Length: 345
Ligand code: DOR
Ligand code: ZN
Image 1 (cartoon, rainbow, N blue to C red):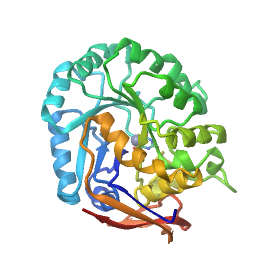
Image 2 (tube, protein in one colour):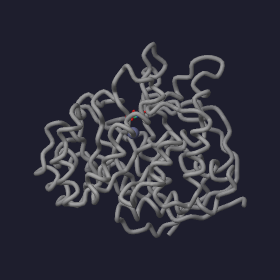
Image 3 (spheres, rainbow, N blue to C red):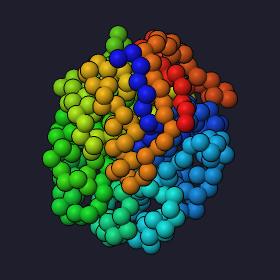
Image 4 (cartoon, rainbow, N blue to C red):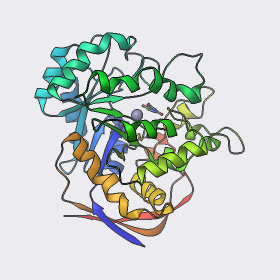
């Protein structure tokens, strides 16, 4: 197959930041996705309905009408059931993000006491607002490559039993154990998978030296994990769907003695997913993963617009310059084999 036309995709996990960075990055997403779940880890984070309303307006102003930002709130130890009810009533908030405090970029204000969140989870279950989880323990004594599986064993496995109607998105899964858990979990549990966790394993962090632009959290895992994610994504199981976790950082903050976590992939996210599915001989499963399963899980209508991809090389620039902010994208300076031909009604 040298071309494929799919329903316009949705990105169920995206960082667009704010200000000049937002203005720079959003156009890459708008060219490929009709909607995106917008992560709330700004500085300061999006914690109230009014924070989310104002952030949504700022996004809409630069994204235009063809794109719908699906807003989320950032869970803190102070979030209460009233905020959850107000979030649901807003109609534009589609989930609440749980960052264990300290787990990743801008997560300091996240949850310190998971055990204290039951009343909030109960409220989310009552109003049917999905819980989106960055599933990693923060205990520094736990090996960084085991933080997802330890979180799974200590916390996540029990959650669907305790809150049987709570919709849970296990975000950016990175391990075979994570994929296996979702496959065996009740239908209230789903997972997003990123292009980078499908296409890279942890060797990509150390090719001829340290590669800060391939550093993200959860960190890349072993080849056996990557293969399990490829199997899950291309299986046709609707509980796995696209969430890019595209996370732009200014070049100097990544090429740094303490480089921050995040891979920018919005410039070619759909093309990279196409490459992954193509390599598995599974392009027939691409539309479900990109454009249908996530929307169904979130209770959203399917998009009517279409996106046509063709097998045609494109060269990825070394860096993008967004109003003076330099961002090094995934596959920077390399050639990739799929391109977008057209988006149409
Ligand atoms: O690599 C990551 N970058 N993982 C996250 O969880 C957050 C993200 C960011 O905001 O940069
Ligand atoms: Zn993220």
